[in-house]
Length: 586
Figure 1: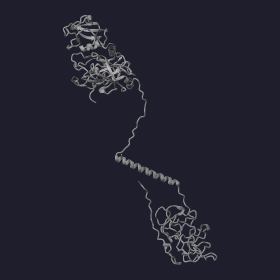
Figure 2: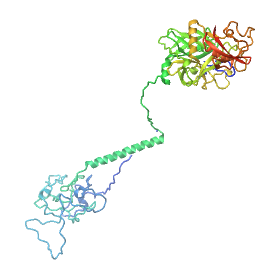
Figure 3: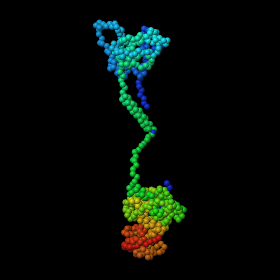
Figure 4: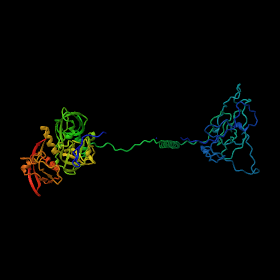
């Protein structure tokens, strides 16, 4: 509803809201196929030459090379021959330097020792001679003894082959060294056993896959530390690959997880004089009113005055209810109650309603509006556009700002005259009747009007532009007390009729009243003070007034019985008068 009768650009009352996202290491293997092994069970003729393939096993022993380097070191590349240091456990004896054939004839073999074949090592120790090996496959299935006696399955004599150069590594596929006779008697029919040397010989008649004999060749112990380092490197590579894959997937598909930093929980208490502290203290005592009548409805704000359930608000908030409407009060905690009108006054735009059967009420303490200074911080609480418990803050922009509001009826009976506190705290439709609080959470004003931008005469409800006005709490306290006690409020009067059409500076007393009666009431306060028709009142207690409305505002900011000093002009001469205010009932 409108907050004022247009007198030039007058403020209006506001109470009704408007609608609301593998890798694997490949080990290079040089697969050199071994010569084809002889077919087991095929007869071998004694003294017949044996093909080279007959001394090579069917397949190499898995995991080891038949030609081991000294000290067990692995072959570093694929060269056919590679020099290697002699094995410390069983060094290979190097042959003596070659001499001319005529100077050094070959010595005769001893009579009591068998002739020595090439490749025989006289210094071989008995412990280096391996025990006789029983062939895995029995050559005589009909009972021929495997050892000792003559038979068609006696082993063929070994193939005589020259020894390789000292220190040279045979190429892959080379034949093993020729076998030498044992230095002592060996049972007839038992194959000779090679002496210990750096050349390792295996049994060509043995089963495929038998481990090679490495007697006399030292084995290098594997390093556990190297295995750990290798494992760590592999683990790091795998982890890096997985991380890179996940990152690429996230970048490609736009899938991401964001974990933003945030402050932890802090103290919840606030200083009592802060906006939060003031709001926490005052909100339990602020209520929202929903009013409905026969033809109109509205929403406004009020605050609790006492434990008896009296609530102070604006007259224009409860006016739509009329004499038979409904008023519902909603507290800050959500509880609701019905309310009835105790009393209201359109001249002050104040009203008192009461709720019954409600406990735990929290009355708001009343301050002193005379102590307010321009620039003081203030907090406004209300229900703008039915948004209850809304808190805004600002300062006192001005004091004793004379405003008139209302006037919808057109006869001036609903016009309110307020010597208001001006504030820039945002006030909007629905804030009407709410408290304006100082830094101690004391009520210093009752929010009542705003000055809207644009043409407010059209009846539309505008928003806040930082020009809000509140009835001083001193005036509100007096009127509320009268309404509670008597149901009516008294107005201070001077007993004169003013010329509302006067455009000069000041408030001029009319020549005569509209109804033909005298403009100065006989025996009234004005007549007693010496005021005469057509006098122009320019000051009240030393403060200038520029219009009739301002004079009424200044008068109504006082109580009946207060003494005022008036300055006026009469016939071009300035005069001062002392006047005691009278009383009139609304």
